[in-house]
Image (tube, rainbow, N blue to C red; front, side, top):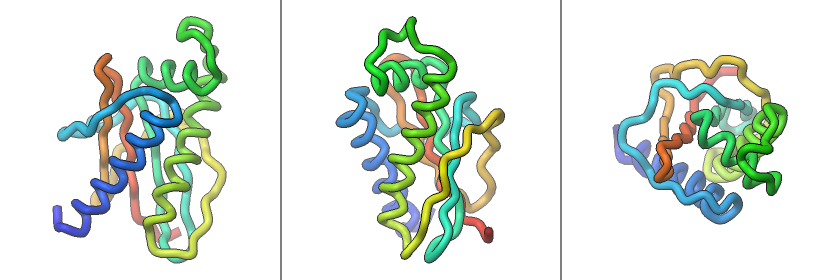
Length: 146
């Protein structure tokens, strides 16, 4: 990874950690080896000065805690629709912050729930965050031509 990609990766990790720690009160840390796929996910495309997509995916356990924190519910009271809505909103928040550090001006699409989270393609930047309960959040920034 070149120094520019490493700096961008650090900024993305900081954005993800800040959102998780400050907004959701779920402490996370950067992990070195990104998972290839995680089951719960959402994606946003960016068009304009930078073109591509940002995908946020999470382990089942962490996505349930994200929804519980976002909607102020107990983990066992979270419905599947809560998880979908929480992952879409989390993707919107994180992608909006990442857009601010990419070349612009750019626009975000609405978040789209992913039935299957695709594996990252070559040239993608992957940042994985983990909590102390074996939960994982993967942020994938993928340049594109759309």
